[in-house]
Image 1 (cartoon, rainbow, N blue to C red):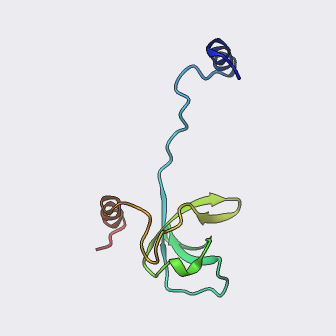
Image 2: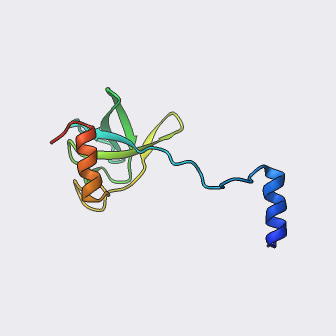
Length: 106
């Protein structure tokens, strides 16, 4: 464990004199399509006007037209947040309305 002086020396040494918070990244949102894939750990989504495959924990939680939060992982995409219930993204109602407006959905 470092004391307060040791932490300050490490920050100076590493050039972390300002804020040490990681920069916030905007959420990447894809939309689940109607195409069904036999692999239970993959779903087909629409992202930036192209179709992509997204690795998920459980395919049965996603319904067509649902917003899927994704992250870049290696050459492909993976789910960034697992929904708690089938067809309901893990966001607040206000965030959901904002997402619908951004993506032109009613």
